[in-house]
Image 1 (spheres, rainbow, N blue to C red):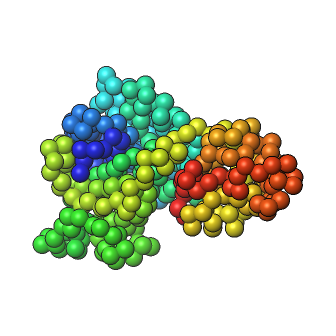
Image 2: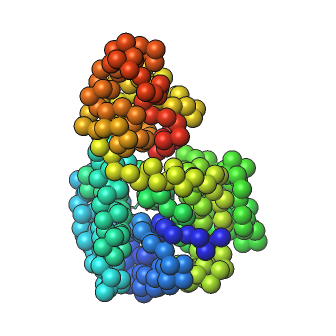
Image 3: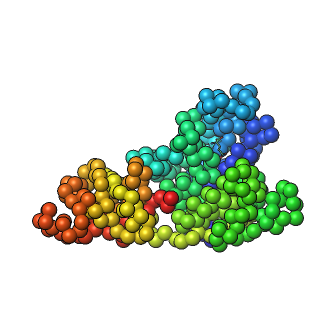
Length: 364
Ligand code: GLU
């Protein structure tokens, strides 16, 4: 299973990093850093870490107790993030670490998406360990992922990762909450999340079976995008076991493997963007090509064959290679296919972007 993984996103939660008072617990963090490096070497792959812990560490450092006001939360995140990164930097030394603080708009907004992806790629290329957290100091509710499980799934998506590993204090998904029912059996493999979703309990509650609600949601986002997902326990030792081929948790099978060309398409730097209407969004989601009639707006300068982002209401939904330059597209946007030749004097293609040259980036 793990042998072909080239790129991994590993998510570490606050409970794996902090002691009961909320202070970062260095031995746990060092064990994790060791586990990550052992796994990285065993698989010869790139790793991006998503780390929580800023909130807990900041509250402990400032002596603040829950509930916090919004400004207090912002200060807590700002203070805690530096403590968290100091410890990670020490634990990974001499490897440099790269801090990336993201909000949901970094995934949804076309320019920020390209920027975030480029920053991650550049950090990896320089041999640094990217460590992502939500930018809690500035993320208001409208632009929040809200939890790092969801953030880690989108990070895996952004990075075109082969696998997402979510580390938690329970070693996988169980038939009942193992902290209440000790004899509850672990589910080793899940082919279809729809069949186990009920185990997580009410999606509105913060803690379902083993605190699994947000983890299952993240597994769904990732596996739908063709990314294998593991929920494992045991901290650093759990990762070292995985490096030896032992799975101490639950494996969620990827729904479909994104073909290599689609993965390649998703990685092409874009030269501009095409705004499309709701009808075009539906067509693209149904696997069809982008036609001029669905195009409402063009920005940037691009030529035939250049990669462009496709967006609807500021949200990037797909990316592909354009059959028309930006200046020609400006003339044929909104038109029916049969009108192309009349307006520009020729028609090489019916489609602005053919479905074979197009990759969907956001599913919902
Ligand atoms: N971003 C938060 C922190 O670093 C954690 C959110 C979560 O654990 O899901 O404290």
